[in-house]
Length: 186
Image (tube, rainbow, N blue to C red; front, side, top):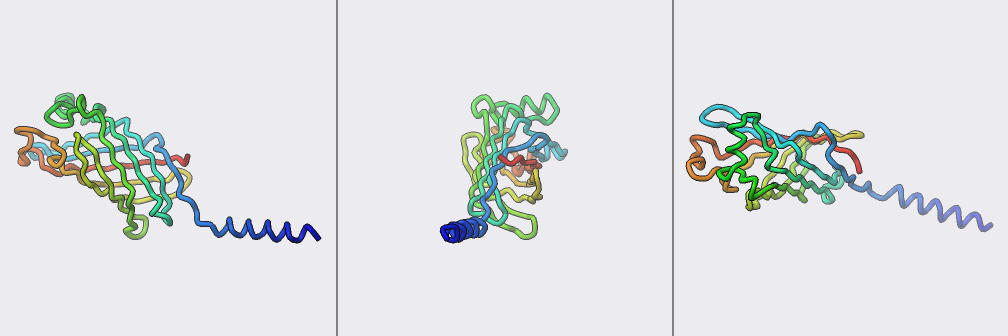
């Protein structure tokens, strides 16, 4: 007769665990991920990337209140593939990577935009300035989920492009950011 209460308790515990909401999963960036930027310089398009960036994310589409995104970007690695551009871009007039070695994007507010589309409302810390930036992204679930996103950064809000470079007829204020991050569950 003692077995019956034990069995009932075990079934009650199992039922409670099955009814518990799924916990958001913690992820780290996998190899092959990219973080890129692009804009115009004197009417010609340019693009570049930030090798060495690192992403950590907590995400479950059914629990956006628990979602978190943290991206660290080493600015000395920024490259367009053009030595002349890269030296100037990493220098004092732009990123000033010696004085501000990294940028960081953190988001704790997420919105569902419909289908597989989401928005992360976060803060970008760049060049000693913090400003809100929204990353819109698609989420492809799976064993290694894929986040594909876009944002726009207004460079002058962060003091990027001093002196003559503040002229938006040379380089527009808006710089496009794109990312494709493959994630490994932790």
